[in-house]
Length: 276
Image (cartoon, rainbow, N blue to C red; front, top):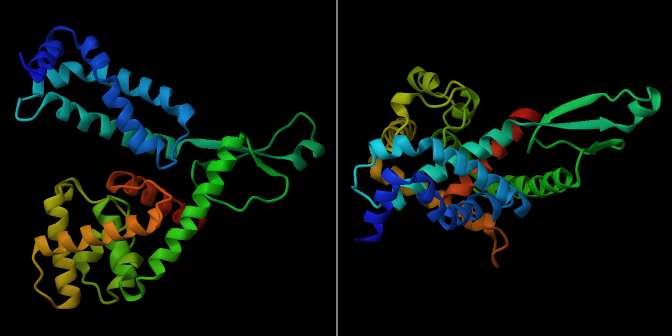
């Protein structure tokens, strides 16, 4: 019996044992996607893994029903784990963090005024305004530094900056605004103004193929060219790789890859939206 046959048997007969068998796989994915890039501290690892374990246990009947054997079960499940990591990251991005002004405590003892700000949203640390934990303060400082580095990196692309940002936002399902489109194409047609209207790309445009089709049409109309979808795919992949290399530095200081880069740019544009 092959390793995959054994895992498939566990899937149907003892899914809990299968999850135990996949603990090392889960740990590696969590480490690579969430811990190494600095999105979460190493002490958060066990909590994240437990969350994924609980998700997988609930998901096992669905996996057993739809797994078709075209790939290794381990590969199939790893996609589910990665998606759950993204979901976990996004849930934390939306989670509110409490701040307190020392001055308010002095003026009204026993009464604490709370100011709520989304995690990873950056703001100037004023005197008397403190994070509720040293970990959040440290995370704020690290992200603010990386956001500024990314600002500087984007500016080096000069005339291509607006084009690159628009394509990245659309490709990664980050809400775009008409101003983002007009920064690239001031005379943008109504068709594209509607597509880039502040909403995430629609379900009909959710696949990579459809997204490249939209971007190819946009770029060809704006620049009067005849690029193919594959040419735009390669161009965007090259730009993302270049941005990742610049963020990681030489010698390497960060641990961004294609997956964690997407998390980072979501936080980056969320921060831009919130600070205006």
